[in-house]
Image (tube, rainbow, N blue to C red; front, side, top):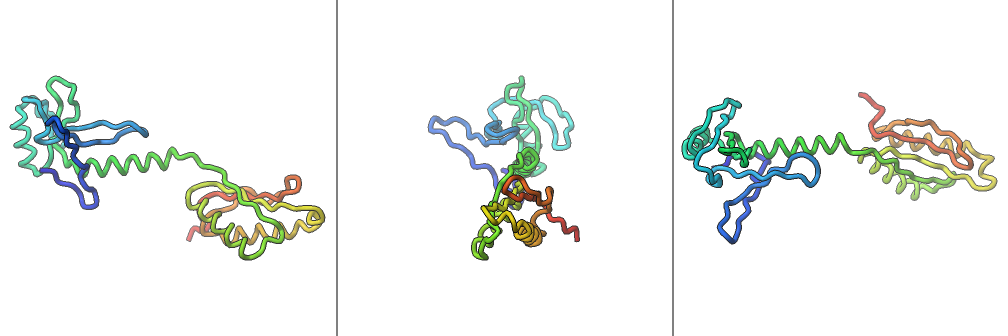
Length: 205
């Protein structure tokens, strides 16, 4: 029987209409890559090369003997190299294995995820309601791990009051202190004042 960690349900078994053995999925590597493994009574070989739970090479044994050893430890017999002659099986906690593989894949996605540069545009006279909407979007971007460009666009005579744009960006910085920190201080580019925020709070305590 299969034992799984709490919060790590077993992968559902697949049943075939032509009486083929049930197969569980183990996903490994990058997106779209998956490797299937037979476990316990699903293993069809008469003999297997057995690896113990601690990695010790036991050698070639009958599948019945391998199952008996796995059951004696209240663990699973997993066929890890079905194309070998004879197939290689390992004694392990299959539910725990699936959980760990899922966690590794999750961490790998986090590390390889490319940071995107988002942009939110303000006007010097942005009203409080519009400001709150834009601020929520900025929080969402930073929480998702994306750098964000905050732009204040000036029109006509507004260029004579650039301090309004700087004050607005300083307000944005203060309101987002728990979500990100300033990577690029406010500076003028044409008729726009631009500030860039990076994910991660600048507050260390």
